[in-house]
Image 1 (cartoon, rainbow, N blue to C red):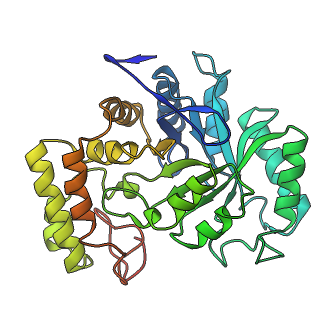
Image 2: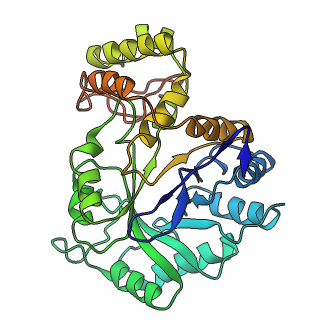
Length: 337
């Protein structure tokens, strides 16, 4: 479908062979986290109108699955070719990752809420953070009831493909290298200024022929717009990160380009990336992200400049909040606002 004069391109989602649009819709903010239902519905409908054919959600994204299911049922355009992914984790409450009954209930509820008889892609949510969910009975080989169920669901046609949705820079790579999964969604580790996924996660996924989906290309708002005053004055920003942001803003001034456009196009400049998720909460934000993607990859000289800026802070400063609290109260070292 057309948007202005462009066309949203598709890429192959690794060994699944699925053709997904370069921009997908992330479901976190089309929920009670980010928007009232009517606004979320308009965002989802606009994504479909613009040709987006991949939507990702999760049980832990508040009512996102329910919102997406309702919005798809009321969509004025066909959803027959839409690729939907969701995750295991966090439901029912209390949730036991070692309980097959809990895992089955989670899948059944996802199917009900999404209005589907099958799921295109089901991911294990946060398989890489010890203490988040105790998924594994065999820590060395990453086995447990969840793997038994995923294999059964795939064999029975309830789930087409299986994947991992994580946020660590190195632990996730070990799970990827088991070769058991078709797709990886990595978030917070691959964007303009945060590149640690390049060290282990992305190379491991490429070795396995997995589809690679990038979440949070705008670093949950830290790269969505400029914060010139806070960058100069915020006491929680480390000196290296402050200098890095100032260098990035100087480049943006030279290019006369919005920061969100630069961020989206940077991720899509990597040919190993199958899809980047737009964490939009409105139709306008969907349009902006699609328009950025339609402008294509960045020129080599700009990518070289960005590499130099990223290298100013190759690893997260120890006290840096996981989600930079631009525009929000600061609650102390290492804590999100």
